[in-house]
Length: 362
Image (cartoon, rainbow, N blue to C red; front, side, top):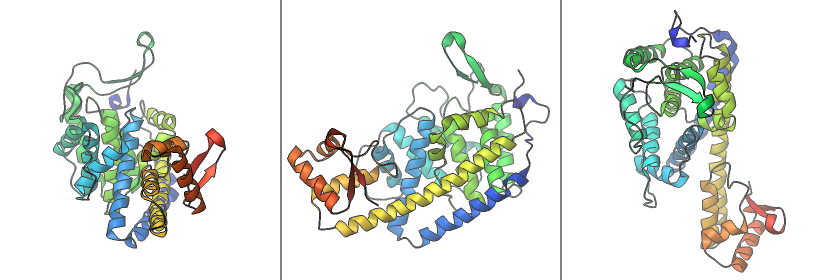
């Protein structure tokens, strides 16, 4: 089996950039739209949007790797980096690490990529993982770094990365390419190649996917001259099989047209998600201002909790049981509160009896 890094022309990926022109145009137009709206938001709302988009990216990037983080804990971690007030929630180690990665990705987007920066990212991400031998440095184990699935007795090797002895040399070349390509490659081509190039080297013992997607955000931000503020991982999470299939198409070849087309579409779709999130936050502000003084503390607490779930809201909608769990009130009071929120057009109702669910009414 010959992998892409074993081919004679490695790491010179081949592609036809002309097929991405329309997507490139759409990307820059979409970015202009997002930034134009942000300029009209107050500093407080703008910071809130940035925290929410970084939180969404962190949650979904972890979920792609099968790790579920707590939204409130991660959000609190990111808020502290921005110096924003929070509820003094005790942040768990994994959420703390992801928060540090998201903040660094945002705050140092224009800094030159270095070995040290990548090591710091990995250290933040893996600081609480006792399974990892090499934390904050490239892998050193002698065993092959393989991407495997299936039962133990029927394992399928989807990809094998370069041996650990070559990693530092390969990463030196990658970092040089990343820093120099800022002036020579288009935004979407550079971001797409950066991801597949990094994942092909797979330099760390674990966390390569999360760091690789952070590099995509860094590449796009540098192309725009400011943080992109797009949650790429949220789009990928919806169709993870497509993501892994597109990556796998590059395992044994340096021709990356299929990958670049797929990934560019993901980026553009993610921009639309970001715009939807801005509108969501603006809708939240309008609703809470309209209801100020018109609802009780229990109702306010539930609405804030629903908004904290983001665009997706509660999985399956808010139930009466959810309301009881959040407010610790009686069932009769919960029924009155919910009916009142529907009457005030803060929520709308679907279903009947035990299947009744409530949704934010935008």
